[in-house]
Length: 414
Image 1 (cartoon, helix red, strand yellow):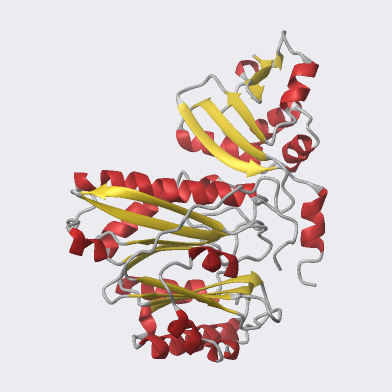
Image 2 (cartoon, one colour):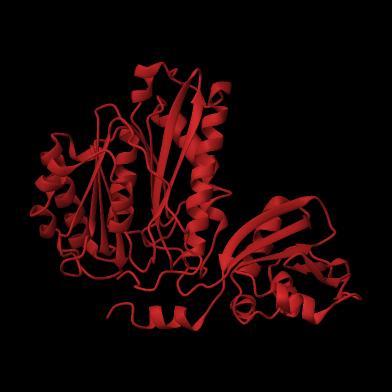
């Protein structure tokens, strides 16, 4: 299902992903949708690994989302199984049984409880998942799991993605260094709501589930929840974080409270990982040729600025104008006006690519068409709006809307 044409916004290189003690990864081709395509990821964790998660708030969640929600309270994880090609969503009792069957297979292969197995699926909605396909690969997945297969893991969960998404960082915890690795997938049906598409973060930091959950919940707000490709929130959005705690053997202190000041560098590094992955998702938006940064300032509050920024970022008219390299500020005015938030037309100023094109409710007196047109040819475009009403500010990322998006989604199930 992944595209053979790599996004022009793709990274030129991928970071070296270090091993994390207590995490082993493997992939397999189970034939979930296509033959001879790697489509299953498995992660195996050492006993005592803490888990935290956020999930889609869609009222039509997938069976794996329901499975994870039911088991996240156990606060412990021994395995993660992810498949691409089929979302196992809108599949009724059959989908729930498929999730239960998959977890049972993984628990037997890893000698753990089914509730310590976490699941995620991505792909077509509404098609039954043939879970028996996992039976032929599960034991091999466990046997072949190795500590340094992050790039392969990211490739295994791609659907319409054109490149794998990985990120890594280190942080000081006490006098020790801990590592955080993350992978993600997503290119379409992207407008996260308290979660993300599919993303998995791994660390050796000795933090319990409650602390990890706090860090995760805070970090997602201005990262994954601040991007959009097409305004559509998936049934399958899942972001799980796993902490093996193995850095304690190297002297890292065990953190028991989210407010511990020693956690500051870890929090910052964790947020950087999510921000990096979120931007990669926006860069890989289906058919995208331009990354768009939308900044709204001078709003009455940050939440108001967020809603206005999302109104701009989700506007097909704004996105197609930028695809056509047209600094059409009238479409931005439209998006601000329809957001339902406080705004004053006669205080409004707008910038494209750092050039002010409109000021105080009218075209900027110094507007230069040639200069603005040149700026619109860049691959990364900034759209800034100043409302002049208060101190609220926010930033979101999106991409342009091209004919390729229609082509990709017009034959998605074929």
